[in-house]
Length: 263
Image (cartoon, rainbow, N blue to C red; front, side, top):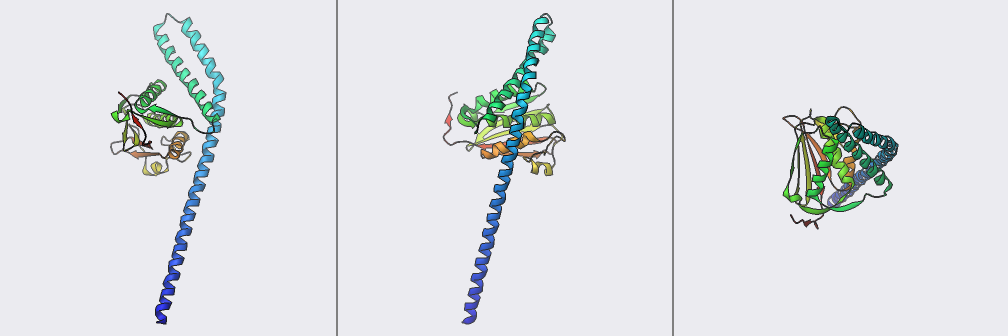
């Protein structure tokens, strides 16, 4: 009888010790996660502050470029080939100015602004805007009919998607494929590129600052995209393709109150 009681006491002690150890490990894991989130937020703020300062400094030279392009368009009005090149330069300079203006406005906001958009129109506009910036890109685009819904998106999501597109185009601007669709209230945005591909080691570190898929640059675009989408409950994953190149998949949960848009 005494042996049975002693055995029960030992079992109870083991149970409580094991439970305490499990609780401590769980608390330590939660604390480490909180520290990582805080560090990431600090890094994002540091990059955003630097970007806003750079935007202010670039404003004047871009304005000067715009004036010079307009003067050249007037001086060489009889040269159609040069006019075509100047029109492209003017469009890209104007896009840079608009992008910098948006960057400054976003940096001044404490929180990201959100607005309701038709997702099909949103992606059409985004890709058209991107192709003006990247005229070297050759791509096929498929926008699924499921995108004909209205959803509320943070404006920073647009820049995150542009970062992913630029990352793929930097690997190889030719032969890209872009696909977007909604499945079970989750937005999927996928990019296939024909670049050199990435290793599993680099793919697992994507989203960390100063990790790049191109062997050059700082990897800040991917870092900021990952941080922005993570705060919105989304993900960014990159996979090497057996046939070569990289498959980039972005997911973003959408509100279940989305309304079907009229076609």
